Image (cartoon, rainbow over all chains, first blue to last red; front, side, top):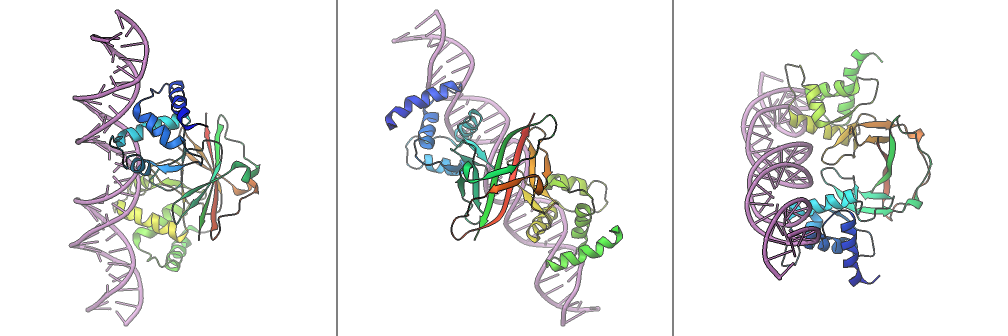
Length: 139
Length: 139
DNA sequence: TATCTAGTTTATAATAATTCTAAACTAGAA
DNA sequence: TTCTAGTTTAGAATTATTATAAACTAGATA
């Protein structure tokens, strides 16, 4: 994929979710999605990295708003691991995680690396929205 | 098990973890562990319930300290579901959860209700500490 | 192209959960 | 009974997140 094409793609993507393609959102799109590997982050780390050197900073409030909007739109997946902090993942496919309790780092586990041979029936009137396995690891 | 015996048991249990059996800790033990069913709670709910009517209140700081100490000692299990709040579980056996996104309530899934037929090898030098499945449900 | 407006960004304040602090208290060893 | 390390406590501090409201802007419309 040619990088220079991505901007147009992001404009379309945002429009299709009723999100105006603002400078800030496009900059965040480029930062998050112009990469080969999936990317795990917290709002704190995203804020630091995206505002590292650029002259025009994106406010923290906008980072929060954008990450939330992208999560609702389905561009990002929220992962619950460590308490008191939300992690996000650019890999929105159904998949699982190792969570290193020492370094507090997340690593993807591809969904084909875990097989469930038995899954319980959800309570009456409820549907399964998502099933996630977190494997906590330590030294 | 005869309830009146439990106090001695808790004293022993605490001592064996190098935790002095103080009034506060024993009261919290009784509240948490003198019950048939497993109990899910947040620090907020525990604080409210334990200080509902008693003349001698346990301070919020002590509730936090005790819950942390009990978790480290292995009497409680911390569950990560909703962001910005820690849930705890008196069921310390390996097991899984439904998390209702509407009501934000947790329900246990007994470990024999889920079978994993394939589990990935942890990264080099790391050991699996715990594997947990969270099934998010909604209407 | 200029105007207009709803959507967006921003700095800052407010909130919520948790952790820290340091003084007062206490279990239990000596 | 005395002593001390461990514990409790109220309140302050910290951290992550959300709310607020004024300034800005994308882009539809004239």
